[in-house]
Length: 224
Image (cartoon, rainbow, N blue to C red; front, side, top):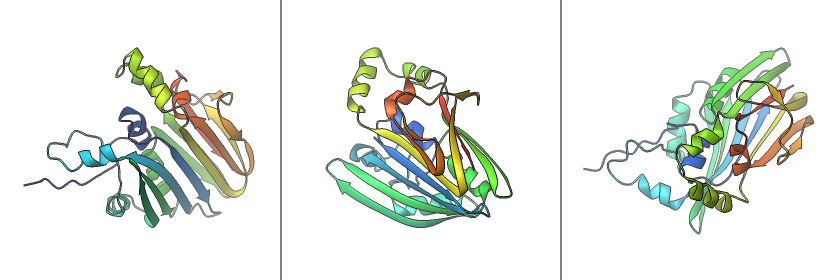
């Protein structure tokens, strides 16, 4: 009998993007209201090959990514203070584009969501101001070098040349964006990134492989 394939965010979603070449682009938009509630909108692409792997027995060791509405409904059931706002899926050629909007009640709920996407998150809010510290990936290059040889790394650079990781944030007032390393220390904005560092909405977009050239990892800090 085929085992029930219940998908979960077993590994951080961004890690799955790279390690399994399953997603080839991802964008995250966070909107926060004055009371700490808001919504998170995410879009990512998944190869048909990875989805097909989920149909076979013996796949328990594979990191799984939510690809259907049912998968996201199970995810929000495990995350207090979060509900599914909208979901859409469009398949073309050899990949599926997933778009999902998640509504969160407070900063604790948002923290739980972000912890499932990146490495580590800390959110502090006092009144109408606050800070989100979001570590996208930690010690990135050593992670890849332990898994892939030089020829595979070169192939990945070609394959992912045009794919980006993007993130934006808008709060109740003007916001600012700074970049950090894996220890939380402020660093200059990566040269490869396109950024809006202050204003009503702050954002950045950077190539997937450019992130892995940052040997001290990459984090972002949103202030509002």
